[in-house]
Image (tube, rainbow, N blue to C red):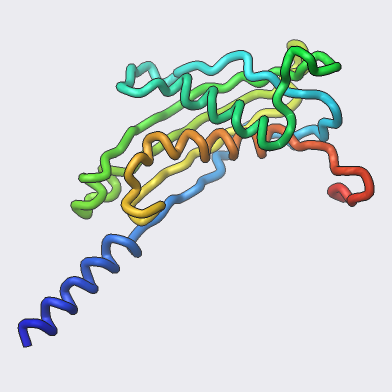
Length: 179
């Protein structure tokens, strides 16, 4: 009888840890515009700022900048000096960041231990804003194992989301674009 109770207790604990919550993605309403279709033009990240008014024990500016560059590279839109046309520019701001804590999340205090990142960006052609995007991502227990390293992982997800919303590559010839 004790063995059955232990097994049942372990199963319940496992379901509580892995099934209660997960990564949530929230679209933040605002000035988001429809991204322009970009053909051969490349994009260069020129500024990332920390608009939270706080100092963190991680490099929030460098992590977001790197994730934006990586997202542009994956799409083949990363500007290099040998690119034929002048680049469009991308400026981003970290609006809110909470590092979170895996131990706190595992102790079933998921809201307190969540990792949260809110960021926005503007895609510019010269000084004219041609697209903007904002996103909020939260990583809670159950996302990616036990969410170890969520403070690092969330920057990659936010970078992908921002670039995906602000920049849209032109369709490959022969394929249909959006109607």
